[in-house]
View 1 (cartoon, rainbow over the protein chains, first blue to last red):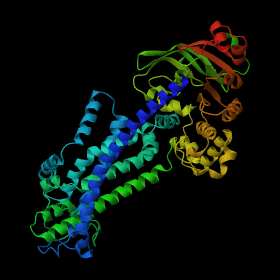
View 2 (cartoon, rainbow over the protein chains, first blue to last red):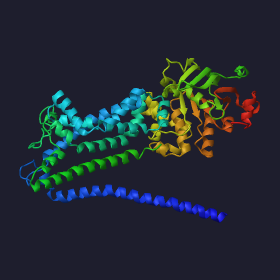
View 3 (cartoon, each protein chain N blue to C red):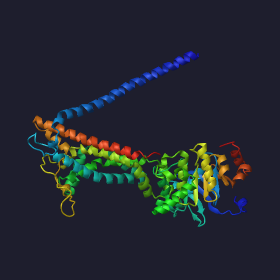
Length: 307
Length: 264
């Protein structure tokens, strides 16, 4: 009796393990499809472009001669646009998230806003381009400028920043909030002294991932009016005369790395395709560098936080 | 119910609960017509089976229920000597929490340094003078019997301490602002027996200096640390008296059944 019982149990275990094994294989294959595709793409890009990647390429303006063309205007443009995007999206996104998560009365209205914010994150990016064209280029008369492009991308990533920040705020346990209140803290003191500092690592990670998405955006910037041929840099933000800081660069025309790539891919000459691949390597390097910063910050800021 | 206690010498009332009713989410009637005194510089224990409302009652004293929507109080808790009703709509809950501090069930130090944990209440009150804060932090840590263990590592993380030390850190945090009442919500339920004993010793030491209200699951703990005990059942205070009377000679059958372990 006991013997048959044990062999019965063993049969069941064998059967359970078999399905576990099968699922393991299926999962591994699924993972490999994704990862191999990614590595093939990156490998192909590097194989095509790495040879072209040199200092001259980094500091040259575009040219009709593929050997003389470079990405100076494009990467400076990308950095400038990203600065505008970050300065607009970070404070707006964090403030909106704090309001929604901590202050807003919970009810049908806040539910509606929540659903809409989440949906906004899924709106096709070209729609944001049209919005930016209407509001910034024509409405605010910022023209086809770095400011228009940066603000458009800020709108694009705002929902992502809001959602990521809300998640980070929500992850702060209620017993820590209660502890702050029990010390006599007001709501703002509780948020400023506790919730925000403890959530900073997660918030920053979310922001950087959002910015890494924005850095590769092309469609909305075409709509907003990126220029494909720029042979000069925007005016320097630091000037020789008082007040030493100039915001003139915000209103300059712009191009960004993906636009430059798009433009080169369009050319018939083989050498321009190589240029596009090289620019792609730079773009991927920038994105990976941002993700690395995100990982580092998350590690640094979360190291001291445990409940 | 106060009559038997009237002729106690040196007994001042720190707070009196009068016909307190409390509703969770406006619906669940969790506390029913509670009336009891809290004596000045004594330890009062709230005991009773799970769900009897003892923690709910405790959290009325610092308006913790205000943090969640829909909760409603009726009746009053008059805090002496000024007689202000802690539950009054015109009374700011922050003012209440500045006078009545709390130690929670699970140790919940902030993920900051030991020093900053204790100093937080002072900072919230706008204290910026380092000398004053240093002094009060030390005094609170001494008061919480933690000073000797942490004096040479005040800037280490509070959350790196052991569970019992963390809870004493939370007690120091609650004492630093010299509150009028300290609330303890089952302060030892997450601790091992040795840490529990040290917290109980501490409560016995604080007795006579500060008014303490403690919720406990353990009747032995109530007997060991408290001067007065309220036995609660289904949202009501069944019996309130000196602890030795509650444990040795309770007036109500329900109380003696609970004490004898026949239910709860």
